[in-house]
Image (cartoon, rainbow, N blue to C red):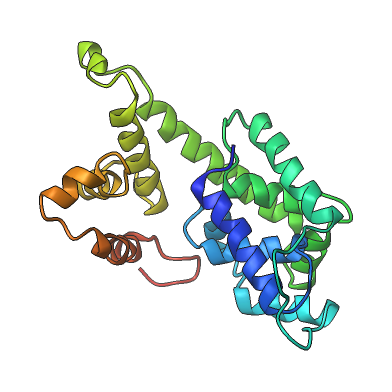
Length: 234
């Protein structure tokens, strides 16, 4: 139900709430989780609008001061946090997606009462309606590319992958291309998608590939290809 990136948002939100000694995970922590995940549509939209971790964290601490010490044990979600997760599924279904992605979580954060995350963003000068429009624009563009990848264009070769593994790699490569601001898939996108595919890892290790270096090299690939944010020089 949750994509890997959406799950990472929850992990980051939990760690933030724990470090701040807040005892529960709320909408504001999930907002920081979206930013901390870095690579999803949600993080990229917020970055393009000038929303930073530092600014959100500062506003959060004005509302909920840091505790005397980090919280212990697994942290529960407060009512709003729970509602955000539930509403994320509704947002995913409304957009025709089968899994919850970071953009669905961000849309849910903007609309779930009492809209703590939306009010926080507005205090930073970023209107929730503007964030929503940008999320929908980027998500629509992404769905367009995913539809192209999912077209049955390989004829009889489709039968080579009854488990869908090859198509999953192509979808992952297309997602990486979209993240990097490109309208086409490059060979490097496919290579990194294969390297991150759990089914391919045993073979790659047997071939002598240093799997542990993949995250570092992937991050470098993303950084080199990421389009400039508004106002940055090309």
